[in-house]
Image (cartoon, rainbow, N blue to C red; front, top):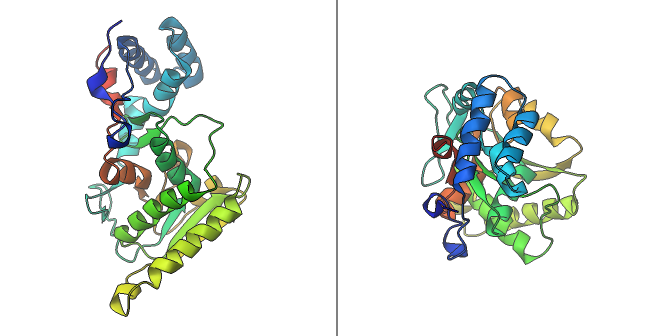
Length: 268
C-alpha cells in the first residue's frame, strides 16, 4: 500500500510518529465530497465511502470533521475571522471585525479539546471550510492534573494576545471536572493579571470562566462581539464573527502540521 506521509505530521512533539495516510483515503475524500455536493446525506455518504474503501474509524472521523460540500465550505469560510502570527484577531474581508475591546465568548471545551487532543498525539485536520479540527473520539476527556494547567495556560496566553475584552469562557457543566477546570482557569488568569505592576497588569482582559448546562445554545445565541469555536452547528447558527482559536494555538504556537483536506479531496 502507498502512503502520503508528507501531507500530515503531528508536529515537533511527535517527531517520528507521523500518521500514514493511505491513497484510499484520498479517493474516499473525493467521493465523499462529490456526494455532499449533490446533497446526499452526510451520514449515509460516509458509511458508503467508508465501507467501499475499508476506512478505519479514525479515517472516517477525518472525513466527517474535515470534508464538507463546496457550498458549505465557502459559506463558513466567509464567517472566519483569523488570527495573525502574534495572535491578534484580523478581520475577514466579509465583515468589519475589530478585536480591540471586542467581547469574546469562547466555546471552552471545544477549544480546550482541540489543544489537548493535539498534544495527546491524536490526528488534526485542516477542514475544507478553513477550520482546524481534531479527531479526538467521543470518549475523550480533559485531564485533571498538571497537564490541564498547560492546556489552560496556552489558552489564556492566546486569549490575551487577541486583545478582546471582556472574555467569557463557557464549559459544559455535564463534563467531568468542569467546575474545577473553571476554578483553575480563573485562578491562572488572576495570577497573570496581578503579575508585574501598573500598565503591565492593566493590559490583561477581564476574563471569566463559568459552567453552563447548554454551552452550544449559549454561544450560538451570542448577539454582540465575537465567538471562538470550530463547532459547525454553532458556526451555522450564530451570526457573530468566529475565531478559530484552537486552530491558532495548534498551528502557530505548537507548530502543528495538519492534514489538508481540500488537497486530499483532489487526489481522488
